[in-house]
Length: 161
Image 1: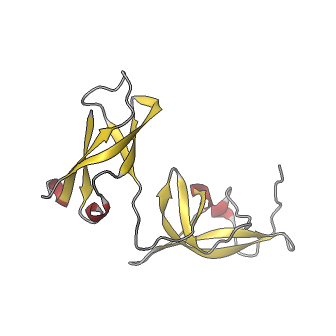
Image 2 (image 1 turned 90 degrees about the horizontal axis):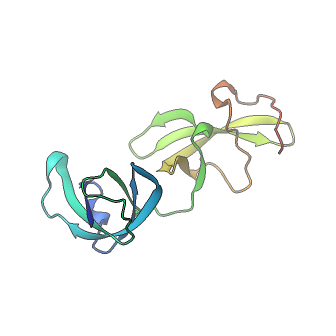
């Protein structure tokens, strides 16, 4: 069985035959299938997107032709670098520049019990988490609740488990 989907022209160069993907079916929430790219179209179709097919590796008797599916493809980019995944609720809005989305998080200072507003570069979203490429480091404690109500230098109480 194959899954047919379209890939935008900005990403089609990263999609190659044999690339592994994962497939989720909206009607089968507990089933995730592995798949491999089996065909990459050479001509753009609707909205400058290229047709692509992925052959299912894992299947189930519940998978039927015509079902709605979500295909996830992990591709390498020119900006491969270390990044941190944080909850979406930790991100305060910033500005959208041509090179990157700049947002803010509030980092907790254990010595003064305050939060500091820190600029971060967002690299995207992965599984409902924000990918932060710059601005945070391992071990940082970041506010994830009430971010819209915080101010730079505000005293806060850290809730410890």
